[in-house]
Length: 265
Length: 284
Image (cartoon, rainbow over all chains, first blue to last red):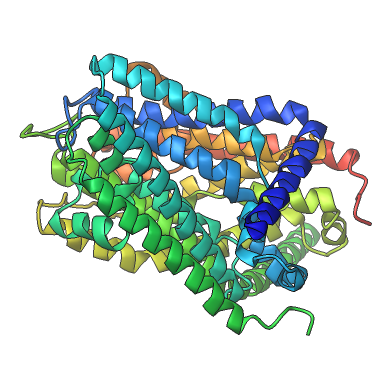
């Protein structure tokens, strides 16, 4: 319990320092929101180009695909707000040896590395993603039941857990791959696969992206659950996936630290 | 008679300096190829985005046909081949040199280069060429793998890979190089170039044909594409290889590619000279 309060206070300190940082570059907030909106617009144009020529992709109408996109962007924005920037610094810390200072602290190193930087200028994208989702539901003229919404939100949470853990594992590779500066691209690739319904893949790949590299649990399955096209029982799967990915990420980090030799020594 | 000797002498000097310049360029190329090889792990990771792109997009389209024979003049086989080939030429053509160069301008690394007996433009060209060539060679087995994967459920489009195609690829490489080079010059004036660069990717990815064949886009986007340089980097060679551009139309498009090379060169020369005049070499 005292341990929990300690971490809560630590997180509040992270939040405070992040906020102070943010206030120094207030113009950035609107600029970031603008850029994120542009990139979302870019993806929507891509969708539009495809749906000019067809009614449905693997059974997904345009409005349904929009709902899926909104879900992915929402998860993406959550990751960008709470984890992304802290984790992005890991390769530099490994290269310069400043990771030592983190390991010496009487704090869980994963906690410190993952949560230290809260990027509030990404909050704008969260709003945009929610608005897009609402728009999609209006176009579908669909009112999800309370159960569907609850299952959906649960799956969004496990989606965040899966995506975070994947990103954490990829950044952990920097312990060995010291010279590789673009490990973050690996997580982009992960999201890149999830941007379209995984139903477009053939049977083999679909299984891979459901059971091995669970991209389907980022946006495809949550969206299906919201639209009432997937059984709520999938939530159990989602939770199992989220928890096992989190445990795997943690184990991988511990394992990697055993090979960490510090840059200066 | 005296004039004849003089002109022969002039030719010889010209020839010699030409040879020397070529030797310098080849030496640069060797250095940068070794340099690129040291970063092959990074190159492989970058390539994954291309691989996923030419896995996801064709499958999305294949699920969109719903029994139709063709979409925008592309049958399923052509659509699949389009993306694989597009990714292949993109690896050789599309330059991202502005990220490094703008950093080098800001940090004053440029100052050392200006002192070297080789023009900066050559160094950048050799660096870009060796990185792109390595990326293309690395992508070759991936392209083969992708084509094999798709050949199991669709008939691929026949490819025309004659010299016109390679000429167009080369011109595309030059267009992209000069455009990126010109863009990097903004670092002489702007504090924050990163966000400008990332915005540049929106029209670039869309209008170069990366996202989808330009023929499938709405009329106004097609018009916009014909007015911007991006179509003349990767879309033209890809369309030539697929047999979508032939005869006079193909030659006029290759001509426009040449025009964009000249525009890019001119623009870069102006920006670079103006930029150097106010460059202070901050890092020194």
